[in-house]
Length: 349
Image (tube, rainbow, N blue to C red; front, side, top):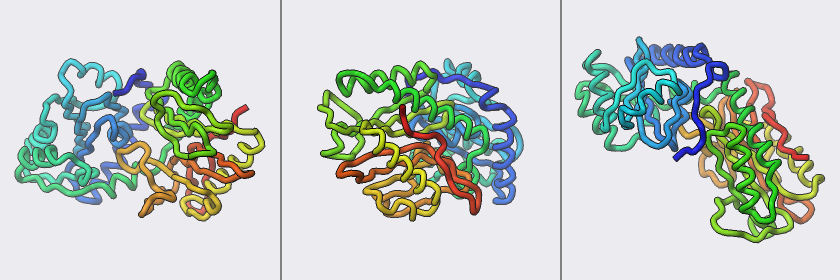
């Protein structure tokens, strides 16, 4: 469950931005001959619906339907008592409440066009019960997978999303500056406290307590002894935009060298050739609904290279001076033929 404050800011995410995204989506739907499009959302897969409406679910599931004509409507499994909260925090034409969100959504679509062609985003990831309810609620509806269509639009960041990612990264940066205390848990608590004060909707802290033993970043339970070098990674969400930032506690010279290597590697994205020499590395970003989907990296069997103009979070492990340094920051890919660059300098004073 999310614990931070979710609110709507027409300044940071104007109506015109959301309407522009919907216009581009409807244009693509017309080319694909889709009468409507459905996007599933839950707290672990919020990024598709939040991109179109600003809606970020706390815990329950919902289905957003975008008709070819007319305003989008949301069918939420949440009770009616949260209707006013959804209206305050998002831009949606109508909000319907039903525990069987697939059934209700299909019935609404079929009431306008009984044999409508419905594109379903991330069809393979849709819960089976909801897919069955879509078929039951609209027996003559034609269901098609619209994942590639949606990813071609969602995978490229617009100026509003870039600005939100910059603010998320700034929160993570300032919070990690306050990683102070006598124990690892005290440091983590200080980081989380500061991020909440800065306005983060959510923050998750992972740690590698002793880089001489392991470079794996994990959620911490209980107390862990700290090695001479250790690392923290902050994953921060703000207005539905997620980034990761990693800091290694080590001599400043090592951190500077690692950051320079990361910037050089990022400049080659979406090619992986810049990561030669990294012990491990990972590129994450949003294609459809997961805010930080693994796209490329040493542990992935198949890569999904990000599109030109995509926002990503990049992290890597480097062997320097006989030790391991972890470094990570969000980055923005350039247009065709343009280099990618880090969105924020991960170095700390």
